[in-house]
Length: 173
Image (cartoon, rainbow, N blue to C red; front, side, top):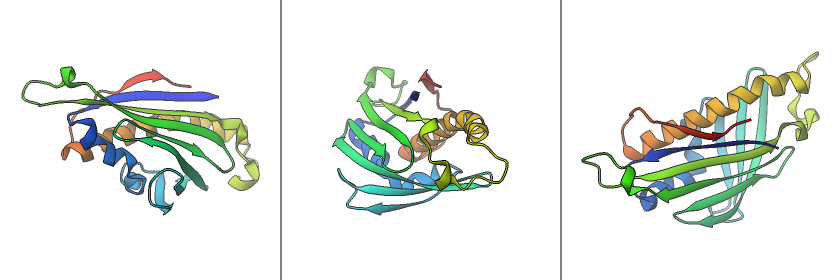
């Protein structure tokens, strides 16, 4: 399994941050490759999200299920179709990291563990002469940059303005 774990600070309390983390339907605003999100459920535990992803000549709909929610601290998810993947959003109070003039801060963690070779190549509709190995080699670096973009744009949404966001990469494939 490959794993991505990164974090950043948002200058808000966990109670203010968590609704943004939980709002999967807003995620297309945070990434260039997620075209739309459709929810089956109320957004709570057991809800399933169809995530329509596109990149290069490929398009794919991932199904993600919410496994647990411990608001305002964590949300665990897993993919339930064609690829073994799971992860978690965590929000931890970190008021000591707030800069002067800012009341508080929270550290937002994004973690995803996945097995790229578990992908069902029949579902991906790969173009002729394109192998799954080639796609994995091209997509792996994109996954980290996409995760970074999501977290940066999420913080801008949470705080209501864009700023330079320092990302800490704790683990990457």
